[in-house]
Length: 397
Image 1 (cartoon, rainbow, N blue to C red):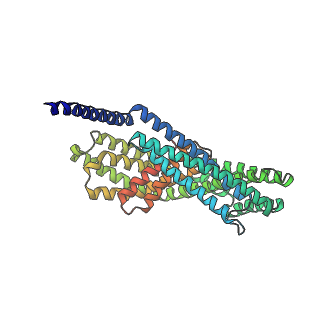
Image 2 (cartoon, one colour):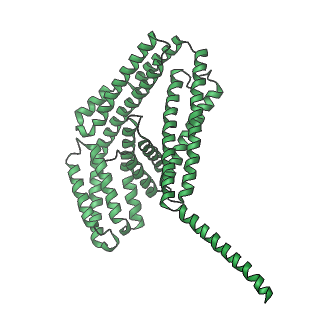
Image 3 (tube, rainbow, N blue to C red):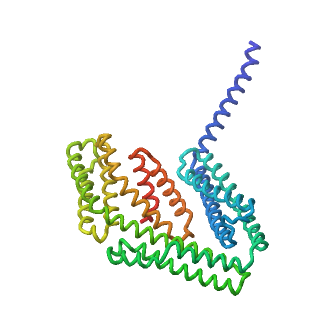
């Protein structure tokens, strides 16, 4: 009996300890999934996004500083500066991918919080490195570049830009003659922005000629970068419009046949289609007919409507279609959807580079999806990526 009396307290103590440990484990697990933990994770991700925004701005400014110093791919560019610039670009690009992953992460809040904090620390550290690289670049330029040489280089970049891109006015004239405003507004806006940017560059270059010690060459480099972006946007808009004009009628004809087949499929297999599949297909058919009446003047709009009609058809009838039908539908939809994604991305790239981080993340997501669409060998996967790229690149309504 005495032995049992001695064991009982020990057993009770062990049981109490086990219960306490179990309670602590349960409490920790509950806290890691609690609203407070999720809020802390969301705040950490937001902090990392702000750090990425700062780094992206700093890297953009570093690139402009390299241009202003005539150091981009220069023969005498120090290896240390070249490596620092490359490291900044890599860290910035990797930061966009990491932050995009964290924003969609639905795992443990605590792990998400910790990863976001580590990412923020890495991005802030790289921002400090970029600042030091800017200082080293300025010191190197003062030693290895004269004011006259930098001014001549800026003027040379301005002349080379015009020689490479040419006058956008002939392209804009063709668009005005052939297409409705809706199909050329982006090009018109880019043409005006390019003219403004070139004027700003000329003003900055003139100021640099009289004030060599100012930051005018940096301003000139920034203006020339804007002009290059806008002139490229005019070229892209012209190319997109002309390709759309060549293909719009054929796409409309093909889509009509596809929607007719979809109407029959929805009636034959209603149980496997979406509940409102017939209504969706009918609405798609009406949109298609409306686009067909203005194909000549609005070919870009027609191509976009065809792509949307096909997407709505797939959403309504995907489960009712056979694997072969889905594959054939993807092959038919892929070229037009890729064209819409590329056009939307070109328009987005031409916008102001001082966009909020959410917009920049969306564009990086669009670029990744577009690259995946081009690389995919399966038509359905390629189409899914192309649609994701199009949606990401399009301006939110």
